[in-house]
Image (tube, rainbow over all chains, first blue to last red; front, side, top):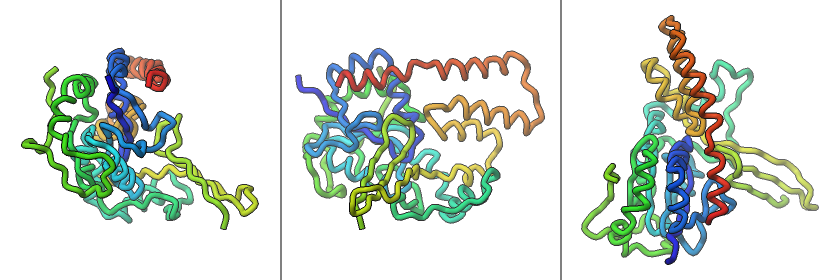
Length: 200
Length: 116
């Protein structure tokens, strides 16, 4: 049987969602029988492969220009995009900063921190430019599946792979590989989104 | 202007790092930068919140080592209210730290690569 290919990346997140996924322990070995992981923060492949993947998994909100690009790239190369964790699904704690002006946040973090001696706000063009507001992944690209939780319970991650793929693939069957525009409308059959439930 | 090499993401570490290397015309290195450019503004948005929320907020700084952040915030909260925890909670806090640092989590990453 052909393995389901997966690409994953973290955006403005704490890595807790990936850690939670690893907490499925020995079920991970069972999972790897049917799943092939292509790009991830810990493998050597940096970006989702050009030929596309079946499932793209993003954790974390989007708060700067690099994360924006990473999310769009993942959307264009993934047949099904899964937003894992509260930050990716709803913004989580990342959107708490939206109540404050961007310059005030930078000033507090880089200049006024109690431990800072001679601080300066980094403005290099090589750095990702901090956006005015942090947004969940669906603020930038279309998301197919949401897996909320901070972090999602390991059991939930496991059941995502074990029980839901048939349903997810059926409803996303019209989504094609190699989409050039992330804004492209994707047909989802009768159901718009799948929300995760603890039912395994 | 010479060549520019970007290594992103830098693997084998936790975090969102990248390395940019600028080369001269002859291929020698001109400048190099190590960027860790994720910035969530935790310092700012924690201001004005209830102190007991810090225990939950600060552990989201890092999902790999949330226990350390959690316990640090708990100790700070203890100091704010001027309380000294009795022996057992203090002891369970330290054992929690040791449990976390000896977690076999690290073994899973190599397994992941070997199997795919």
